[in-house]
Image (tube, rainbow over all chains, first blue to last red; front, side, top):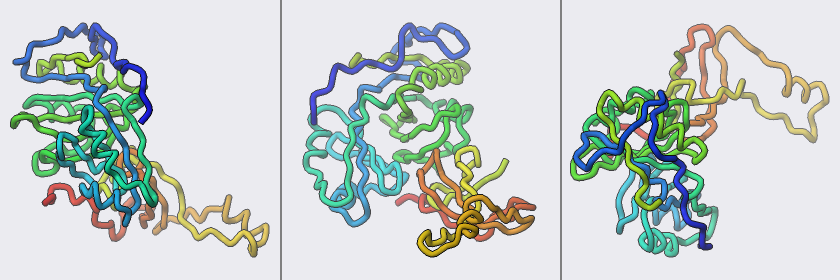
Length: 199
Length: 90
């Protein structure tokens, strides 16, 4: 893949909620956090049925799995999003057979992504989105797409050490708005924002 | 609120989808008359009853699909079983 320029976060600091309330970054023990993780490498792979790439990725639609440090998300019936860092994701992509109806696009710079972590993370999403965030509908590993605050988003449940956690991604141009509106919705649950550590 | 049964994602708020319109077979442009072609492009049946229509799941699976809806009661007949089958993952 061609060398890309240094990553620039879609979210500006200092943090302010959509209601104009200044938000201070919290400590590591904050009960609910929203972290900008937009610098995560995001590779979008479309592969037609019957192709080697389709068999290789194999993660069913609406599910995700971790493989060698890369989160492979079955985002649409014939589309996968690969999330990871550094060489791990390059290894998976380089090993992908691109023969047949297969396309691979690097969406790192075109997509914003946030990690919403905490026991009340589902309660925050319930305020913004009509999808069902109950455990039996969206367990750990579930991948869904839908409207969050009227922005079309891809959402993956990716729990960390047993703590409920969601990766929310959208078009980069909506990143600032979505970050602010999630902060606003999470205020009543004591949400704390974090900047992208890579920016 | 209209709940549309997407065959891939399952029941969704209609705001997550785009209504494309009545679903009709496209006539062969090589053999159809001008009147038939115009009727296909511009004339709609708009019945008070069952209608076969196309929807686009713009926020979910991004697929076009066809459903039958009663335009009087807004009920979908034989809604498809979603591929996703949320909650029944292995």
